[in-house]
Image 1 (cartoon, helix red, strand yellow):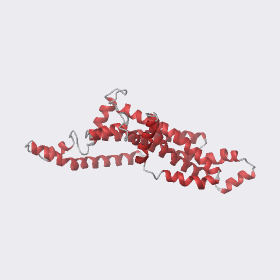
Image 2 (cartoon, helix red, strand yellow):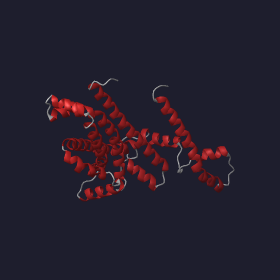
Image 3 (cartoon, one colour):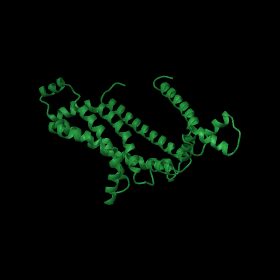
Image 4 (cartoon, helix red, strand yellow):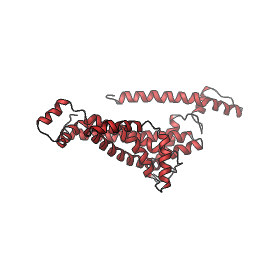
Length: 288
């Protein structure tokens, strides 16, 4: 194996091995109680098997989560309200909408900050301060206020994602637009380039790597924002709703399956942005 595949697989094997050992350690007391109540003799192998097959374990074993994913992803129609595909799409649609809003707002703010110096001093502290407010405190306020005026569903959740997304995009773009060195900017002045020409021919191309790095962060946290927005309202659909339902009924396998599904969706978003970044790089003449 070459490239990054080998190290990634090696780390994955270590994580799975540690996971199985942790499942034994955490689920063993419950398994011993079950054997004691049944007045049944058991050996080490019986105990290990019992810890990996409990219906409501403290920590599900990886194969239990894989089984739940297989059942709820491939074993049901994507339109079924019990399907993780259905719940994943509900959350993903809100996350993508918020990601789009957040990206546009972040880029616009960055352009304004770079070109209007007073905004850098007046706006940047507020942008940074906005991220110091816990999202768990903001989400219920936004959901309740918008719900009181009849705005429910995807839009309120997407606004939470927007709130989280615009910050990394704005910060990354400010850094990227300011990345051309002084000599390059002076050279544009000697060519009598206008501010627009300097922006489109120098600042914007230089900011592309910073933009895509920020977008990868924003895509991942947009999904977190959508999931968090589903929690305070007791949503009936979405990965957050699956987490809530799992916690209400003690279905830890369902909770972990929803978490793994969320991680896979986030990784997919980051992968797509990486592919777009590679395509844009080729169009700009970057070497593979």
